[in-house]
Image 1 (cartoon, each protein chain N blue to C red):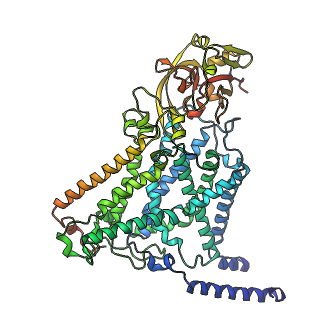
Image 2 (spheres, chains in turn blue, yellow; image 1 turned 90 degrees about the vertical axis):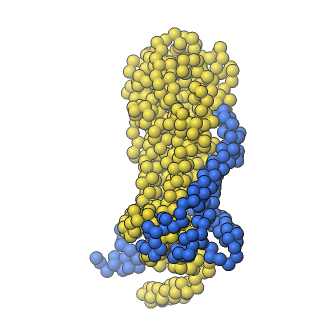
Image 3 (cartoon, rainbow over the protein chains, first blue to last red; image 1 turned 30 degrees about the horizontal axis):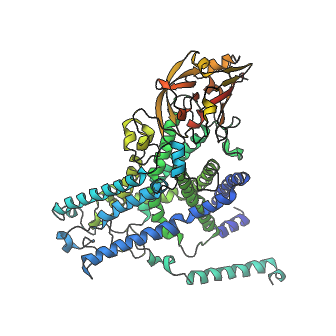
Length: 182
Length: 445
């Protein structure tokens, strides 16, 4: 390797094929974006693409993590003041006979319901109902009720599961794989 | 000032200044998410991210392949057929779309849409699992790292852009200020660029991650036995993890369950039959499941078809070596064929039906064409993106390609293209032109 190449490599911080591969990928993306620009649509494209980059990290994540924190706090308050937030925590053998925590039996159906809403909100909220109805000849109005029905079913199924877990002898799963095992 | 120094002196001084700047930046680490202690989930770690990554890698590869095939299905090299002009280098893989198997397009689109929806929870879980890395401080320690992080714009932005535009499009919610076809195709290429580079840079790390823990053991470990992953240089594991509230298998089960649930609530619109009744959320699912009903992509009203267009004054013009004008009765008097073919929409839904009508090849002969090449099919519809399409030689000559006049033994309903529509085996729904007014045949070159 010549001196100049090794200096460049040291400055760059990775083998030069790393640089070439990255430049090639940027070139491909740039070429595709140029086609959007040639179609006269780069402004909207760039705006939506920029929003997509941060949509999860700076928008969705703060919302769902805040909602989850609120849920956990309210369950903790209901469980009674300063007690441990999590009766079934790792290493807490004293909790073996307590009721299993209700948290995940609420979290999972709620997450699924919100996920359905995230994906199907235009139909559920009727945002495109005119267009949808004109195109398909179908009404968009059942989607809200279907979403509510699926949400209700998910919570009901979770409640049944919880009831079953209450009746199961506590700790029978835990013995198989105790705390601290890796 | 720098200009007065020799280049060597300037370079050294610049490097020293840059190093000092970096040190200062590292020391003045911003608060909040940039602090390692901010991220507390005990489930984050290289193993979890790698498991989600390998599922996404498989799923997104299928999305890329079905997506590119979906574009090829339009035969975009024929005139009028390409809704996304430009970037001819990205169209290197195109081939003449086959007419057999007739279910090819139906399955391709069903997989693309259903799998895409099923991957939403996996994508979100993956983004959640790597979120702390967004706040790495300092943002980059070398130009290589900086470029690598910039390439994530193509990956993350491309993935969410493609998912968002696709999901909005299948619900006819056209809020985006661009053509869906253009943006979804070229957005896909930006995403592909990001995916390829990300996989080439990270594949080894993913493999190491997958080997770092046993999947079987994780699936047997309940909440009580759930401990944080071992620290690793990837920086995904929390520096000071909190006590877990969910086991790792619980997170994987919830993600997989959500994927399965999303798919189950939509896949019936692609399979059809009784499963359509289970498709609570397919835009042509349960809602389009009436007895003997066939879903409609675009009603006659939406296409602005008038009584005059399709009433007694309707005439079919066949152009070729000679021009022939026919009434619907005259077309009905020609030899009729019946084929069972699916109508399959780019939006993922599809349904098979029995179509009766005249073979396109027979119509070509009526227009004086003996060995038909590509044909241009035109609707009486005045505007709309696919009112005129060009069928390939293979499509025109396929014995299953009909100008259909009847559907399931009765006259075509107006929403399905009365007085006459084309049905082409294996072609996208929009290439099965409704309310056909004119077909221009050509002799094979």
